[in-house]
Image (cartoon, rainbow, N blue to C red; front, side):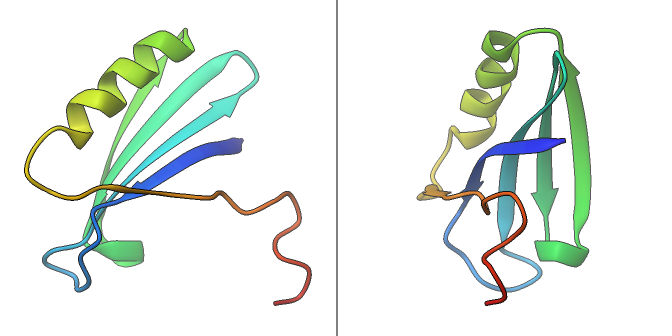
Length: 81
């Protein structure tokens, strides 16, 4: 599965942090909404098209949080960093 995009609401801490991920695997698009950081709780959505997935992402990013797009890691990580 390839991560295409990642958004973060800019807040730290288990109770406040939220992340949204857009991923693709072959011809299936996946959206993950995570609350609580890396050990938090996730909801997953799966779609046939990128347009459907992006519509869900837009809905999840709507609200009062200041969302920031983060760059995905390149394949293989950051080269030992």
